[in-house]
Length: 452
Image (tube, rainbow, N blue to C red; front, top):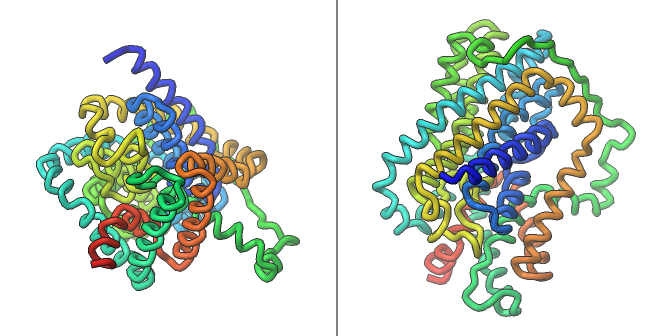
């Protein structure tokens, strides 16, 4: 392999680790919203695909390592996947073990990554013979995936009922783009619609501020107080196998294997189900909380890594919630990448493996050491100095730019419409996975089930 390419991958991985270490600490930074637009912009800018993949893997590992910090120090999840750990982290915090909580979650992330990378490549090798069959029935698989994810969600009937209307809205907007001349005839608009879904909850919340009754409900005179606990210093290099005891290591390892094997299911649901199950038998409250958070963090990391690697290596189709959400640009970023010609087709398995190892290893070496040493200081700096609104505004601006590149001013209007619809559906309990799967299945769904 060209040494210069390896150098670029390392540099990109370092940049991603530094950037997403800070972003991961910011509360409420959804993985899809902060990863998908940046990855998409890199692909469309013509950055070499191996460099993009190394950047992405470093970003997701760093993000998952640091989103435990606001959970431990303030009880606020840094991302969607950190939410299941809040209750257990608060148990440790109440017992004066906030620093222990951070280190155990971060150490669980390390074990999850170390297990998931080789396990995902092995699972991808086993599934490769099925790639052609899955490709032939891709649209049906996406529709079935939307139905399955809807049935697994808490508000299943709302999610099921939303699939067909949402598909009709998507196809209607695509037809409008073509009839108005915003896109060439025969072009299927994807990027702006995908991004509209990612920022849906944010845009919907912003529009709610235009309603006087909603504004009056805001508690402007009583800002939320956040108590930050500084972490105790650690000497020497942090070692996850010393921070976790043997039972916690075994539980984290089992969680990582389970997360890898269930890559096609919703990571949040599996994190709660498996994480709680593996920790349920521990009677001591503090010990149970420690076991739970280390297992859950391991499982989420494994689910994210396998959710990218298995579809990328074996199938070339984004059939997991992770691949169809934050990692979607690795599979489908028209006109650079399409479902018929993406990283699966353009990179060899060794190239994908090398980029993955470089990205993940860089984030583990940099972010893990920083997290276990300076978690309290990082949390305080981000909460005090980096406005949450500034981060979100940055990503929204990037979405608007990419939507304009997709279909001009009409593309921006389309993003706004899809964002409001997706935001309302999300508020009703329809998760991202259902909407993303519907986006992919929309042409087939409208043609076969609606038009007949």
